Image 1 (cartoon, one colour):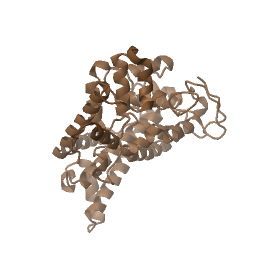
Image 2: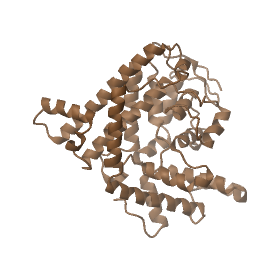
Image 3: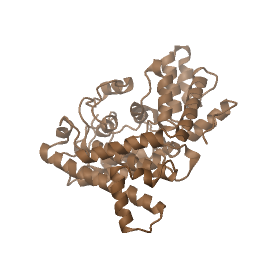
Image 4: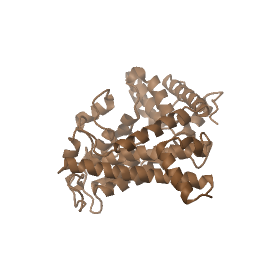
Length: 397
C-alpha cells in the first residue's frame, strides 16, 4: 500500500498532511519525480470522466435553463479556489485541499438532489443511494481507465477526506463505504484532516453565495428580499454607500463577492483561534481533536443559518423549481424501472458484467449496476434517454 516519495512539500505547518508521509495507495505505484502524491491525485481527478460529466450536471437549475447558472463543474471550481485560499492561510497542503474540493460532488446524480432522492427511493430495498458513498465508488472502482487498477487509486489522505469531509462517519454508513474500509482503513470514527475541513467549509461558503447569485439572476427573489439577511444587509449598505449609482447587476456581484470575503476571513480568524487552543503537532492531532477545527465563528454561523433557511424557502422550494424537480424525479424513476426490468439495454460497457453473470446476478447487484449507470448520467443524457425510450417526457423547461 505504501508509495515511495521522491520529495515532499516544505514550509507547511506541522499539522498539515505531509505528502512525504502519505499512507500510500491501495495499489502500490512508483513515485513521481516531479509531483507529490496529492498533486497526482488532483491531476487524476481533473482528467477523470466523472469530472467532465459535472459540466452538464445541475446545481439547482436544469442544464439548459441558462448559460450563466452554476453547474456541478463550475461550483466545484469555485469551491476549489476558496479551499486553496483557506489552505494557504493555515499553511497546509493546497493540492490536497484542491483535490478534495474538485471531487466532492462526483457522486451527485443528474438533476441534483432530486435525482439523489429518486435513486434512494428506488434503491430502498437494495441499500439505498448516498452521493457521498457514490463518490467513493467512482474513484475506487467505477472509473475504469488505468491498466493496473480500477478507479483512480488515490492516496489514503484523499480518500479519507472524500469520505469524511463533513466529519466522522459512524451512523447509517453505506455498505460500499464499510466494504472498502475493510480493505483500506479510513479511520471512519475520527475527524478528517484540516485540508478536508477546508474543502468542506469552502463548499458551504460557495453554495450559500452562489445560490443567492443564481436566485437573484433568475428573479426568484430580489435585492430587497435578501436585505432581510444580516450579512447581505451589511454588504448592501456598504456597496450602496460607496457606489450610489451602481446598476443592479453590479450590485449583485459586489454583494456576493463581499459575502464570500467576509465568510473566508471569519473562518480564518475562528480557525486560527481554535488552532491556538489545540496546538496540534501533527495531522493526526487534528483528526483526534474531537471537534471540527475549520469553522465559522458563532455570530457568522448564525448568519449562515439564516442564508440557508432563506434559500430553502425562496429558491429550493420556489414553485417553478419544485415543478421541475417533480418532473425530474419522474424521469429518473422511469429510467431505472425501464433498465432494471430489462425493457431497455444499457451500453455495452455497462452490460458486460450483467450479461456474463446471467442468471447468477441477483436483484441487488442488478439494481446497483443500473443505479451506477443512471447516477453517472448528465442532465442532458438522462433527458435524451427518456425521450428515446418513452413516448412522452416530462417538460423540464
